[in-house]
Amino acid sequence: RQLGEGDSVYAEFRVVRIDVKQFWFMGTVNIVNSADGNPSIIVIIVDIDDWKKEQLSIEKEYKKYKRILQNIPVGVKCVQNNEDFDLDYMSPAFLSLLGYDDKDLEKMFNRKYINMVVEEDRPIVVSDVLEQVKTSNIVTLRYRSPCKDGHPIWVETISKLYPPEEDGIQRWYSSVVNITDTITDEQKDHAKDFAIRIQNASQQWGDVMFEYHFASDRIIFSENYKDLFGRNPQDDMLSETASIFPEDRQELDKAIQLMHQGIQPPLIEVRYYSENRGYFWVSILFTEPDALAGNSVSVIGRITDIDEAKKTKEELLIQSKTDGLTGILNKKSIEEEIRQSIENHKNDNSIYALCILDIDDFKGLNDTKGHVVGDYVLKEISRRLAQLSNDHVLVGRAGGDEFMIYAKLGYEFKSSDFFGRTITELLCEPISCDGEMVSISTSAGISLFPSDSQDFYNLYRLADSALYLVKAKGKANYHVTTSI
Image 1: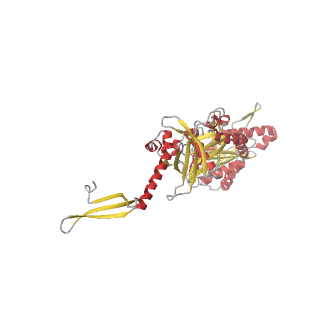
Image 2: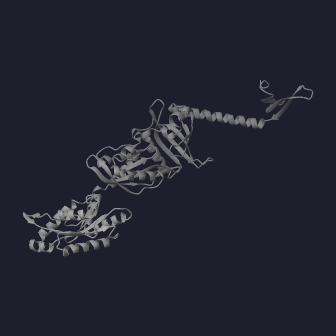
């Protein structure tokens, strides 16, 4: 047969010696043409007895192990130590148990073993692996795997993590047993394992605990989530993020990016939506992300209700920045705001007007009408000025009966003269106090940024000088250092 295919023949055969022992030989036959043109056959016989018997022994062992793997009620698998547990090998017994063949592993699961775990059990599997591997390279897991006919079975795996092999990859070698018929109802509720752990922590802290798994985008919350938010949680991060105030979502996005890089994010503060309370402030604290083979796979976090503390802090901040009598910015705050505006607009073409004004003969008003009326007048002046306050106009009380207004020209105020006229006319209307009409007038001095100065102190000094010039000329008017 072989001669029909070429000029060389190869054969292995046994020879029986005279003492009846059998020995393996290998023979090669080559056909060559002799000098006279007639074909000749060259035969070489080699003793391969030791090699052949070793090979047959290996084949015998292989057939034995293969038979064992195919028939024992224990599956065997080998997976890589990464977030998807990429599948290198699955024994026929395990495949048969689930009803798949080797082609299904690629077609249905992309050879990722994590996909062969029931979806809601995957976070638990990853959590258990991360927890157990901290103290041992042997891990025992219980979870459900879906069979090809659609029903899940419970399996128990005992896996050992080995050091990186020649290709640099760490692998888990595992035995797998079907425990569906032996597992108790309590054990079947395996998803409670994590919930119990975080629920204990939640009860101690009064906060909502959660675990987020990156690959599946799955998030599990402690049972007190509904107590805080008035609704049931979403089970994926994308949907859950929709409950965060839109302007605050970028804070969470930044935190998630850091976690994917294996970096623990700083504490963040965001507004969360509640069915009962609307948006309210919470803080979110994250642990350092857990990783498999250098890749971040999950993180645990804690959500704390800080709404009351946040509002108290904001109220205290507002109080520290506002004048106690009038409610507009106090002297320190208006000066800080103006300095910041000057710093931010030194390099553009914006024109600002700084107005210093006071109430004409306010001391006489206090002396004749009393401080109650005087305070009422200050409040009414502040109320009228506050009507001007917006993104382009700052209003504050500098102390006593002195006020500061800092405005960007070109919006409500087309010119510095229009600015000065608007303010003095706004404040000259009589004020009704306990049925009595109190007549008032104000004087104002105005300086301009940047033409007069790019320094707050100099702008204030120039506006103050302009104010005293008005006072010297008869009050109830305004004066601009440079008319624009």
